[in-house]
Image 1 (cartoon, rainbow, N blue to C red):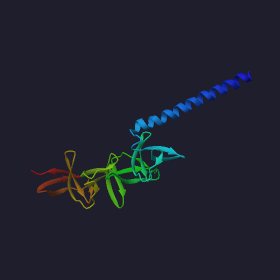
Image 2: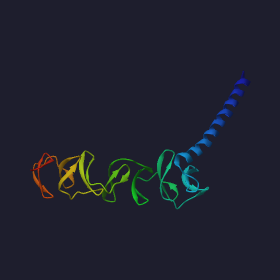
Image 3: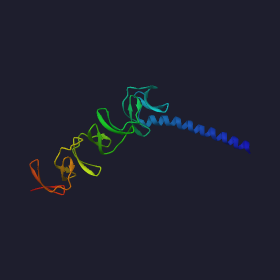
Length: 194
């Protein structure tokens, strides 16, 4: 009985070892296929427990950018994945928000270098002007940056609102003029006067 158990155990270990080898071989090719990377452009590989951007087996230490690996976009700096980076990074002329070295896809405001930036699907959107909801308040953003100096009305989804010092003011009631038009404000909502 003991010999059968030992033989069965050895067969199981060999069988599992073959499965592990197959999984490792398939994993490498799957990474290349999923990432749409080929060796002429480089790829992310794991070397000594660290993710490194390489080409033809040589680490590309000059590479800085966002690259896809195992289902996630990762921030690579000087050829190495930087899982300690949280904030805005510049790649190919655009700014992206990364959290723990992974590109994060929120639509939110992010504080960086004494400025609040509007992040739309993980990227700074410098074309957006309008209202953004953040931490229980509505804020006025102009060209992708929170503008605390703005006081006036702002359109948001076919409705108009009164903004004071960059924040929607739900308590304001009164009349304001904006671009030659008069608006009646009731509890922060603006109505065009005829």
